[in-house]
Structures are given as C-alpha cells and as structure tokens.
Image (cartoon, rainbow, N blue to C red):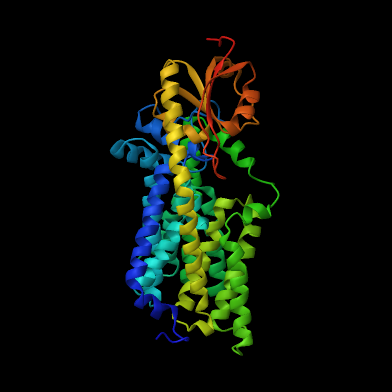
Length: 478
C-alpha cells in the first residue's frame, strides 16, 4: 500500500510504464495537431518566406501588410524562414511538413532543457518523461508553437543554451563565446528573446555577483549588438530595414491586457498553487525561506513580474507565456519532486493534472479538426476547378497551406486595417474564405461579389465555420 507521505518521485517510479504510455499519447496528439490544425494569424509570415526561398523566388511573402503586397519579407525573426527553406527542400512543402518542423524544434528544446534539470536534480527516467511531456502539451509552451507554428518554438532551445553557460553543471571552456553566439541567435530568431534573456542575465548578476555571471552577461550583450548589426546590414541590402523599423514600432506603447496574460489557463492553477506552496510552508512551521517556499516565491515573481517588465520594454503577448512557464517549471518542479506531499510535493501532482487536462482537451478537439481539414481540402479542390492559374486570389489564413500548394496566385490579408495596394485590389478575381472572414474581406476590398461555392460547417467552438468561394461580379482590371 502506498504511504500517504510518499513523494511524487517514488510514485512516478512505480507508475513508470503508465507514464511511458502517457508520454507516447502526448507526442501522438502533438503530431496530430501538426496534421489538422489550420494556419493561424501571423503563421503565414513565418512560413511563406521560407517556401518562396526554397522555390528560388527569393525572400518574399504574399501576406498583405505594412511590409507590402508580395514584397520582400522583413520581420524580426529571419532565422526561422531560412531554416524552413532548407527543411522544405528536403521534406517538401505542406502543412504537415511545416508544422513538423516546429514540432521537432520544440521536442529538441524540451529534451535539452529537461536534460539540464536532470544533471542538477535527481530526476529518474519517468520524471524526465513527465517533464518532456509537459513541454510538448501545455498550452503555454506548445499552444502557439507546435499547434500554431510560431517561432516561439525556439524558446526551449534558446533557454537550454542560456542555462548551459549561465549555470554549467561542470566547468566549460570559453562560456563568453557561448554567450556571444547565443546573443546573435536571439536576434535572428525573435526580438522577444533579446529582451527576456537580457533581463535574465541581469537578474543572475544581481543575484550572484560573480566574475562568471559578469563575463557571461557581457558576452550576451556583445552578441546582441553584433546580431543587430548583422540584421541591419542584411535588411539594408534587401531594402527592408525601414519597413522592419516601422513594423517593430507598432509593437510599442500598447496597453497591457489581462486577457492576453490569462489566455494560458495553466496560470489560473499555477498562481494559487504558488501561493499554496508559500503558505503551506509557513503553516507547517518551516517559515518563509525554506526550499519549497523560495520556489513558490520565485514562481510568483515570474508570474507577475516578467509580463509587467516585458510590457514596459514593448509588448506582452499571449505567446510569450513561455517566459513565465519555463522558469516556473525549472524552479518549482525539481524542488518538489522528491518532497513528501505534505511538504510541497503535491505541486507536481497539480502539474501532472494540468497535463491530463491538456490531453483531454486535445482529444476532444481532434474530431472537429479532422472534419474541418476535409472541408478546407474540398473547398480548395473546387476552387482549382473553377479558377484559372493566372487569376489573382485572396484567401483566409486558415486555408494557407492548401491554397499555397495549389499553384494559384494567392495573397493573404494579414492586417485588415491596412488598405490594399490599388493595383492589387483591382486585379483580385476570386476570394476563398472562411465564413467568419467573408464580411471583413469583402468590405476590405470593395466591389460586388457573387457566391460560387459554400461548404458545410463543422459547428465546433474553435471552427471558422463554412468555407466559401466568391467570384468578382464586375470584371477585374488587368
């Protein structure tokens, strides 16, 4: 019979076979998401330039935004489409190929990150699998990366890289060089990484005040500067530096939104859990400064501090929730893994419960996602039957992969507040849209449109509704 004072680590060791099957389920569900999740919001801007580059068309994007219509791409993460271009040349272009790229990146980061934890804390194989499974399923870590192909998938890799030189398990040669190269990588995979790891390096130095922390922070700062100079040169040569600055400028000065913070529902559990860790230690007579209590304090600091600081720098966005979740798991989970439940080990049970809920939600969503994928493919097949390859088309982002592979001249309106270039607007002949986009895009373009096709609707909460094909009623300009 299991003792009521058993630790999570001892229970996990006994249930290692069950946990292995659970991890396999998590990876299978994550891979299923790569097959059936439609493109989402700005995913087009991360994938389309890589597809164009792989096809030899240059660093272009057909997303309609402040960057132009079918112009040279110039956002803050050029490393992602460059790597995607090489991936597409090997594995081909498509939704499964593109999303699998982000799945592999996320999994590699999760393995390296948990391996670092394992080198410092006595995590067994089962505990290792649990931590990796968490990184592959929790919405705050994978919801905007694996499921929606964002460049935040590189967060875990960059985090493991940072910890490798900031907290090496054993002496390593030239940590400043690793920090320098890490700084360059941060610039080329997303400016949000620059802000976060700068804060992290500064916090480490204020905490430790050692020569090693100072040298590592100095190397990171030098790498960030070198990365920005390289980016300035590359974008200057391509003629998009000013567009890059204008686009980055739009991200500053926006108000902090609690809705964007709480979009990761794990926080609604983690905040009271961290409070519970601290209060539980106090009520048990161990004080405010015990190992578990300190872990709870650090958790609360990240939960409330990082979003506020990042907002002051620029903008906190819901995909940035990894900035809170990763430090929280690194500090709290190992500290509680070998504790009896009465001394804070229950926190690991809370995390495992979140994993179970995430799996159940994903299982519940899967049938509707499969059905909606079939509707998207049917709509694009009908569109190819109706339209000529040289006719210009506007499409919803949910249909990006299907339309991009169709060979048609398709554009995707990313920012619907921006006017379309008049020449492009006049040439658009077809609209292939999800039902929710229909009134927005027709008003965006103007003119008269007639319906040529409408699909059935899935009707689920996350569905885009039916898919429609509209033909311009008045002849388009050439």
